[in-house]
Image (cartoon, rainbow, N blue to C red; front, side, top):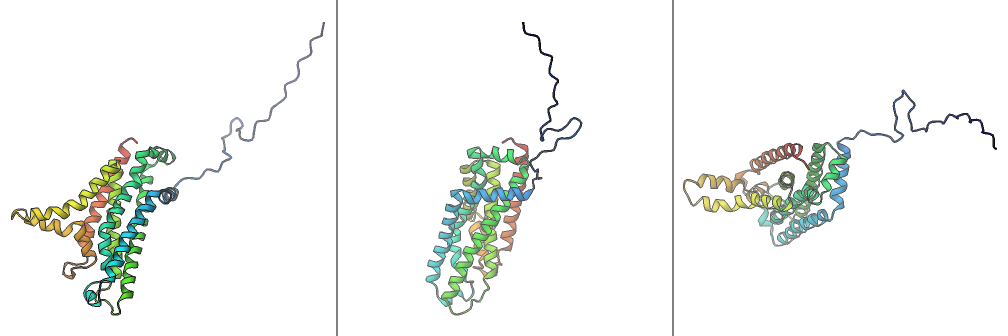
Length: 281
């Protein structure tokens, strides 16, 4: 018979480096960085430059504004710019190009709801208001830079075709018109955030742009509705753009129309922030 072996003494096992000793707090070996708005901005910039819809939409926008602007400028003479700025040819392309920025503004937010990726976004960044703020800032910056560049290129091209200096300075029209269409895009983004549906938000924004341009023709047929029709005609999107390009020097530079759009956009953005915090994903 084999004799029983004496029990071996227990050896102390050293705790791993990642395991906290009793009575002490745990320190992660992975560096922890407090997130801020800059991270959200970087994320949204990566998104907006990575998807094909951005490149296609902005490409069509540039084709419309610059292409139509060049074609119109080639048909003008020196006499056409005695009382109008050299950026006028860009107005005709911008009338159509603004639809591109409206569409892109909606897709920036509604596409994530459509694919379900918004859940991943809010999981990575639980502070929803930071995500929406980053989307608004990045989109506005992209829209303003692209639209101002397109209008400015048309102005420089028209300037090069004519020897005489224009009677109206055209630098301010570049900023005013670019700001107007960029705010339209921001309004579309806010509407897309509230509706969470691409087709519904785009249809709503087309109504905002087109209905006020069509309705005055019918409202002004009635004496009682004439005042409303005249105001709607003065502040609708096509005429507001015309004011920013100073097509009518007696009606101002479009500051009143731009102020109204800024107020409406601010109200929509506030509504988007409120609904974002109150609703589930």
